[in-house]
Length: 158
Image 1 (tube, rainbow, N blue to C red):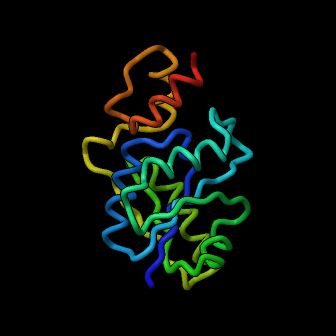
Image 2 (image 1 turned 120 degrees about the horizontal axis):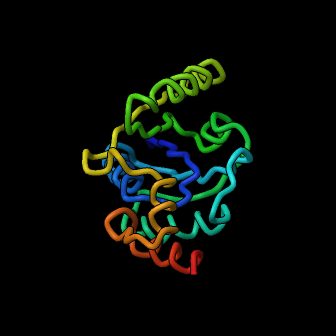
């Protein structure tokens, strides 16, 4: 079974993230969306809330599961018997950081590949940070996030 891990903070999940999940689900037998606990960030949503939001948003994909993790991604991927890690790239500016992570992961566990995937052109500009900013200023995020995430943002900001 070909398994891939798609890690991220997903704070919140965007339609760009969902695009990557959908496309990965066509390439792999099993896609694990792994919600990271990142001590360097102050998330709007708890790790558990993000896991629940993503689970609801991907419920129509039979080969996608959602879980949380902390610690080293490469160890998590190995524990899940993944052959690859998918990382999303929106712009050239993302590449340098992601490239460094991929090389470090390769050094730690050369059997697990890193695959870079770009979202559709319509989502290239989209980031969780921008979604939170637009929502926080009262803007409409309908085209940027799934309906359940839009409701969660509204609830959190009201």
